[in-house]
Length: 93
Image (tube, rainbow, N blue to C red; front, top):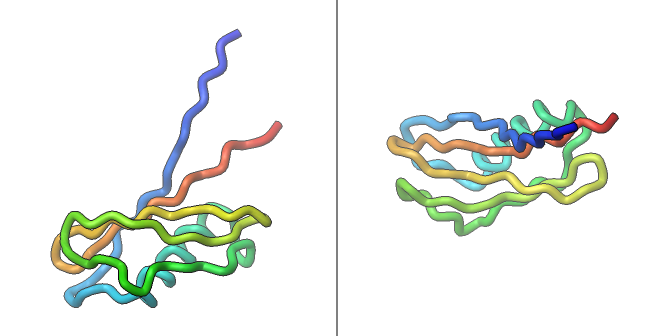
């Protein structure tokens, strides 16, 4: 029997015309994490207040989901847009 494990990430492209703020990152991480873990199951979202906002920058925010500390990866794109990557938990059987 061969078992293949896949690690999936939910990646969301977000942003606008202005430079994103820490509040923007927290809001988007919360939304992305809740879309993976379920509404009301995400808390304590923390993003750095001095996060780089120039194109190509990558950093992490953290949150608690289902009692576990998790991370979301933020990548700054062009024109103030950024992606949020949240690891999708493996199903348990």
